[in-house]
Amino acid sequence: MNSNNVTVVGLQWGDEGKGKIVDALAANSDMVSRYCGGANAGHTVKVGDEKYAVHLVPCGILHEGVMNCVGNGMAFDPVTALGEVEHLQGRGVHVGPDNFSISEAAQVVMPWHKLQDTLNEESLGKAKIGTTARGIGPCYCDKANRSTAIRVADLLDADGLTEKIARVAGIKQVTFEALYNYKGEIDVEGITAEFIEIGKKLAPHIRNTGALLRRATAEGKRVLFEGGQGTMLDIDHGTYPFVTSSSVSACGVPAGAGVAPKSIGTVVGIMKAYTTRVGAGPFPTELDNEIGDAIRKAGNEFGTTTGRPRRCGWFDAMVVKYTADLSGVDELAVMLLDVLSGLDELKICVGYKVDGVLQEDFDPANLADVECVYETLPGWSEDITGVTSYDDLPANAKAYVTRVSEVVGRKVGIVSIGPDRKQTLVYNTGIEGIFG
Image (cartoon, rainbow, N blue to C red; front, side, top):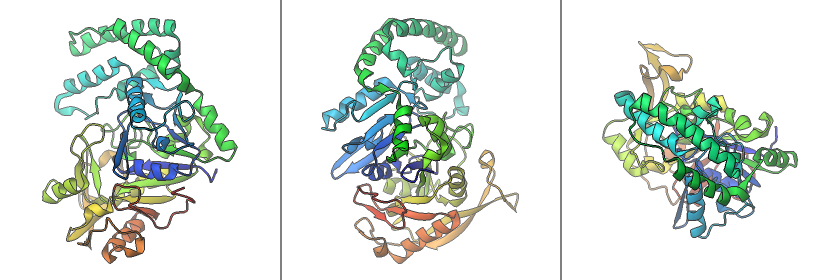
């Protein structure tokens, strides 16, 4: 295993605070690579009074001398990406070929993918999955279909791209009319002109990122793999069908970035001190009451990408132990601990029962019928956002973190007590130079 590399994964249903930890780790990394998902994942980094929300550009872009890669496993939306690059540049962040690379093998999210996402959700009615309507699922469908896929490399060939867009758009037009009774018309000429121009603008950034990452690892450089969303949304291992369309755990890194499995390195699992999820699907510890509302308000639990309010609940150790085991997590980063300040008591789900029988194995497909087994811990009233050392946390806050570590079976390396970079307590991490 390459001990220099680090992989960051979310251990719940996304929105765990991965962006902040990636930002901290990127300060001492040579490369940062995304490997899954697309613009459906939003990472937020707060630096002083400045807040940056990125969806496709890796969080390492805020550090000088770091190469940021969009991996081949991503569903890449070039329209969103170009807007994001221009926005960052407008705020004084350098984004150029020397620090931002896009895999030529990544799939391109086309306008018809977003249209299909919306049409399909509307057709499902109450059975809808709750997608972000960013076209991610339809894009990955075309990846598997192959004949209707467009890859980033195609953006560099204007003639070939023109032919592909015309052919695929024709197929989509007929399909949408038949499946959804769609009466609109796909603007082939407009899409072609737009994507040819985008291809020219992004051309300096398009390259073989897999080769760059493999070479960096071979040379002993530190590569940071930035996961998107959370493992409970993984296409294979999450709460199917209420999941995303890619492999978001550490299992997805080799295929999604183009590196050997041993290149994953140290795996840091990011988890909230409580639990949230967006959209439909089972949520055993959900608090549809005043406590859940209080957590949502205190944690500003609204989606970075969609703005949708998140469902909130107690910390579910069954979920996090399962996802930590799946990705081989070496240490945990406990995020948003400060949000729990002011609650008289806190609960941790430490087991599931079905028909009164304690369950031995975790099954993500059968969470709708489980009954949570809770432990109750005392809360704390102190404001912890200004604490600068883990030892200075209230005794009950430390006891909560300790119990989380015990029930999950992983050490806690980092504790976050606020959105700012400085509001991060390095506790028991095995990663050197986490803040550069």
